[in-house]
Image (cartoon, rainbow, N blue to C red; front, top):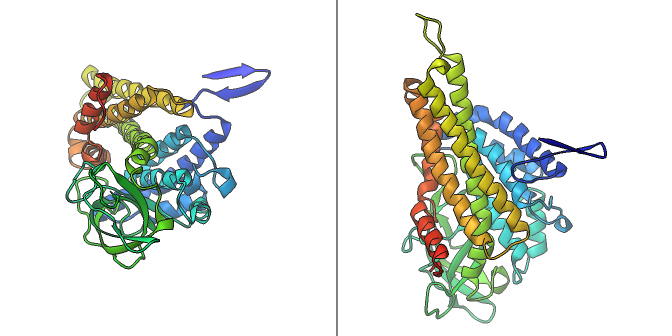
Length: 398
């Protein structure tokens, strides 16, 4: 839809982005077109999509949501959603790495304690620093908000931490991990602190690889911190405020990004199904698959479910610009809706395209696998259902 006002044309975008935001979305679309040819290889070999990250860095998209005063693009959650959606249509593993990076880097922006804040933000903005999240632990599993590890004091200006972090995206390639631990002498796991751990630091070791069902190129692996020394200036939050930063900063950005990633998968599955139904047919009577009402109905369901979920995310990113009491609920519902939509839509795509999808003649089989990763990624769909139910009945999340 185009509105004309004093001969100025602006396009209404589902995520509410302006002309500048459309420019970043266009850049992401160009990158997506270039990396789509390597997505199958990334999946088969379970290799990190280095080319994709290099292209994102070159175009300034690793600093998309870093404030302009630090050299970033200063863009909104809506633009982040639009960019991620484009990337996910081509290579969901790339989109996953990107989402983790953007969500983690927002803790740099929000921190009041990080000693090297400006230099780190400038490195992220120019594409020379890749970061990621390292919250979940072997002992807490998908309950990322409840770290088992606890800081020990090591003099006045440092702490020591040992932790077994599980399934850290970009484990072997990130320059830093945004991590969590209980504050010294904590009485509860919720009395936590966020901190920055550098991959090159003594005491940091990636302790495994990733051979999963989907998102096979996201380099998700366990990371061990063994007597890692964390200086006071590497704390991202004050002691005890880690859970608040997780919920108020990380979770909204992560939810927007993963919802957009799910929508990208949906849109890719719709496009592949459209192409198959329109281009394939029966030799004996000349009909196309699109002439079968049941297949058209499945495609219609796929499109409707996708656009319903995208609309909810579009509303959510607008409320994030002027938050109110309902904003956290919409954030949770947006992620929940998108994850469920991705499962539903890719399942219908497999059914609509039949043997061509199951035999891997189409990329739909890969989309089907990639879509299922979000279901078990913390906060899982089960967690989200409980969180939304708690919010609707006036209970605290934890």
